[in-house]
Length: 354
Image 1 (cartoon, rainbow, N blue to C red):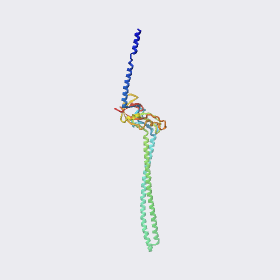
Image 2 (tube, helix red, strand yellow; image 1 turned 90 degrees about the horizontal axis):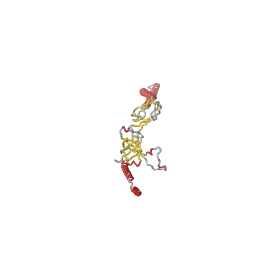
Image 3 (cartoon, one colour; image 1 turned 135 degrees about the vertical axis):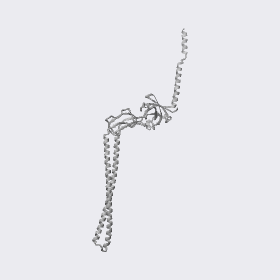
Image 4 (cartoon, rainbow, N blue to C red; image 1 turned 45 degrees about the vertical axis):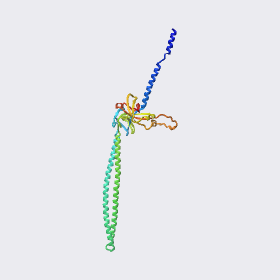
């Protein structure tokens, strides 16, 4: 019996174990299938998970200072372009506008006064011209009389007293003519001076009109409207708050401006081109499947746009594969697009071969 038991144990030890080779074979087949699938997949796709959703964010900045009178929106709500969102107390700006209008009215009145002065001086100039012409006529007559008396005095036809009177009349006529010439010239210069002053007044009126337009513009800035349609965020304004010109009050994430910035390795760019189809997986919504297309490429790597860009000329050079931002447009329904928020992480796969 002992011998028979030993024989059975020897036969059992000699029986080969076929389970392990089968398991190893199955694992090898699975590995081959997986490797082939991965090889085929990456031969047609370029993937990266270094990607996020971006969007155009418009900061709303106060153009004028003042106390906040009213707020017509809530944070994280949708607004439309041109919608009134904030109103600043405008009483000071209305007073400034009235002051500018009053100054414009006064300047316009000065124009009317200047025009009246021009008409008056023109009339004076015409009168001075008429007097000069009259003096010229008298001078001509007196000069002729003097010439006649000069001839008559030679043969004694007139007395010396008559000749002296004729000479005196001539000198008076000459002086009167010169005076009338000076008066006419002064009247003309006065007309020119008033016209020059009127031109200055016109310039002043133009400036006052500009002041009125500027006051109107400043008044319009007290009503803050949405620069674009989108969702408000980062609200930093309250009723009664004193705000300053240039202060950011809140931001608006624009509608229809959502896109993806994918940071591909520089070694992947030779296979990526504009217009290629892209499959998109959003980390926040695993069931959401989106598609898109490659739109354009950044002009430099992300490192070059950093606060402290690397300088390889400093002697501490270590070669690191750089990444280049690539903009991807998203195609999807409005319902799907409304779920997306700038900053969300996504994974993208660019189809390089069909």
